[in-house]
Length: 159
Image (cartoon, rainbow, N blue to C red; front, side, top):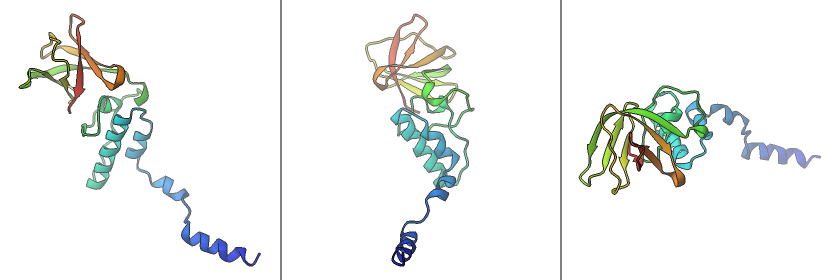
């Protein structure tokens, strides 16, 4: 028994109690944990860490805000929505501007601040500023936008 007391004292010095650390995890970081998609979760963590390092207290990102995000995107915060992150399959938005890149691909800016770039060169969509479009999660981590005729093309979020 006499040997056990010094061992417990030494263990207490080298292995401090980890329970209080769970209380100091910021809400911004906790909000990212529930995301099932790796790219969206990583983008959320990156944004949370950047906000913590910068000292800003921005609200947690909404599901729409993180939809289609990857680790390169530092998405702007939007209004919170009640939909869980793992259940969000699509978002809708109004096209605020539309332009063609040097390669002929369409770049669409939505009213929620997101920008999406076309990935299918062979698909010609008939969309214009003011149109409401739906961005749908497709297979293998891709996203699709359809025009009024129902024709769709693959898009990638760029902002």
